[in-house]
Length: 477
Image (cartoon, rainbow, N blue to C red):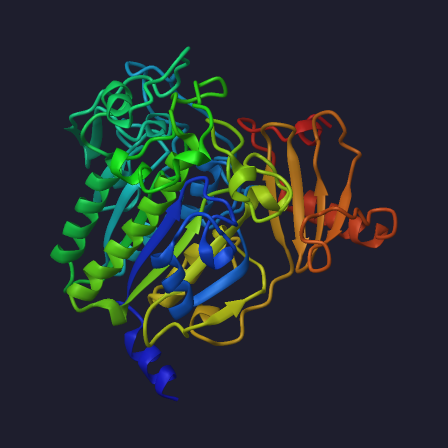
């Protein structure tokens, strides 16, 4: 009864939200999800003192479409953005930005702003460039500090970050984040001087987020903290890299598989995740210092599974937790993500939610938590699950991905049906029981024709063709 009374009293406009989304963080890269080599005490503490989801999915398996679905609540069969459609190149003088989010869509920020919230994004936008109509401020955000362009975000030591509509110049090398080398300095300070600089983007992004919290502690606020850690390139301050064993790295990474050379790739990747964890701790400390922890929900998740390039050694760290696939795949390792929610006195401590939810549920969920009416979306609110009540039921989760081999998948609770190659082998269909077989090793398609027929109906009704993102053979029929 006490918890219900507190929750009812705190539901917005008094309830703040900090929604943290990591970039390319795999399911198994946090201690609370099984990571053994990289310490993540601050995020683990959030999980212990809050609620952890074990079956939470990104909306896609790469950056831009996941962010589009997160912002709009539209799944990838309906979303205007379904892949990483670039507007420029990787050179520092090339135009920046991706295919923009249409003005006709309603975002989380617009919905909460209409209810009196101060809204901010710190980190990566990736849904347009600096042109009018494409920036976060054109889609409901009052404040923005970070990267507009996801290609620019490949460099964690850029020449500038955007402060609303103006560039904030940084003291960095800021060159092309995709280089190859025959050798790389073994001394970390020399390497840092050659490729990086003095202003780590994530320190600047954190500083601006903390300032926003202090300025708005008396107002309801929504922060979308879209960090670009641990996405390649492998870059971190030398003092953080030195925290990890030198024996981890027997040879340097010279850029052969994209991104920047690095003398200690495994240690640097661990340092990036450790820095991310420290950042989460600093955000929590800030709201505690401001006396608003008991009315601020912190959510933590990632945009897709761990990557396969840039010198990242996902096998060494068991980054995707033993799940099949990586980024750019709709197998579980490419799309199942950590999800943690914390707010003392509002969100129950130590609770684990095993029912599946997905990132496109977030607009409906945050609207319900904050007491606002959400527009019609494809999502199912997980707000009741966060408040310790029975989770809402759903019929299915739908995801498509038109790039790479082109894939389409539907989840019916623990059962999953996937078409993994809609470009070269469109007739191939696989079925998995994820409760018995989370690593997707035992294909049940020969015995579950009933489930395949059910999936075909969902695929047919939920996919609306998009000429910018044709889905393999599906949109050629």
